[in-house]
Image: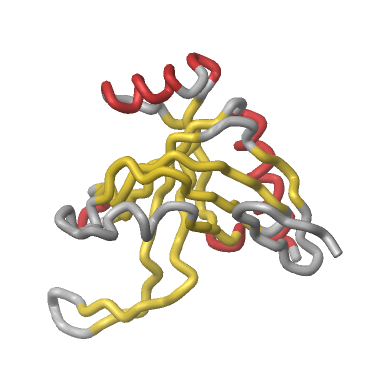
Length: 171
């Protein structure tokens, strides 16, 4: 029997760990809205993992949450140590990103200096929803999201994610 300490997440059958960012990442979660304007939901510090099937994020410290009540006693406790994953089937685009802003630049320097670079991943929700049209009628769509995070080698991460997404789409 294996002894386990701390927060852990078992991988699914056939899933293998391909990459792990060795340091903590600054992560922004965003959702596309009407006219593709971005809406930031939250920012956290976390660990990023890539397997052959998904991107896994362990959210360690929540820095900003637009979708949580400010006056709530549970504002931070419910989000800490929470696992989040994105199935590679739902990734639509991978880009390099510029982490900007005073807060982001300060945290990037604090978390490891200039070697940190941003990676931007666009993905769709695995669930389809029905949206009503302004002109009447409705259609079934998947909501679009974006995640931007700092990694130690954005080019390697981008190539590895794109390779895995392509491999899954061919199956």
